[in-house]
Image (cartoon, rainbow, N blue to C red; front, side, top):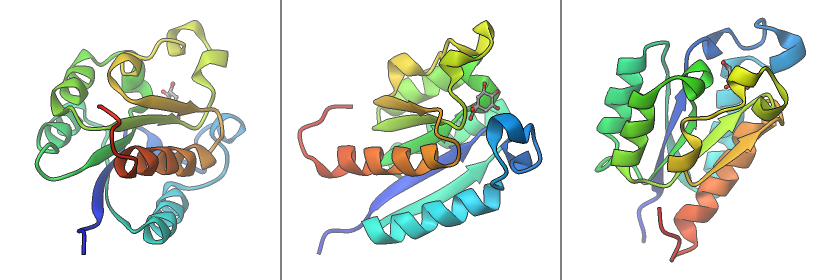
Length: 153
Ligand code: DQA
């Protein structure tokens, strides 16, 4: 039997506040509820998840840096670091694992400083604008990349 694919899920800064942080933008679903939904879907897809939330750029860089031999793919909402962190971008590029970037809000329809993602060029793809459901769509997309052989990245 093949061993289940292992996915590292990273929630960036301030996402621990989900549910009470700008609910008109990010919705009322808490991070716990997001993680529960992810774990449920992961079970159905027969993948395993390790979930990290961090407000610290270096901690996220370390987790991605250690991911290459431990995980098959990365699901990441880099939150505000999406728009600022060359370090996280470089870590994702170096990890060279399939990675899907997710955002609750549609970053392309928001303030101009949010419209650029430094991550976009180094991830496999991006899901943005579907609230908490973005995470499930992202997980499905990543699962597809990990199970359809032949896709590079
Ligand atoms: C976010 C969008 C970012 O611009 C913002 O800084 C966040 C959350 C989103 O999920 O919509 O913290 O990544």
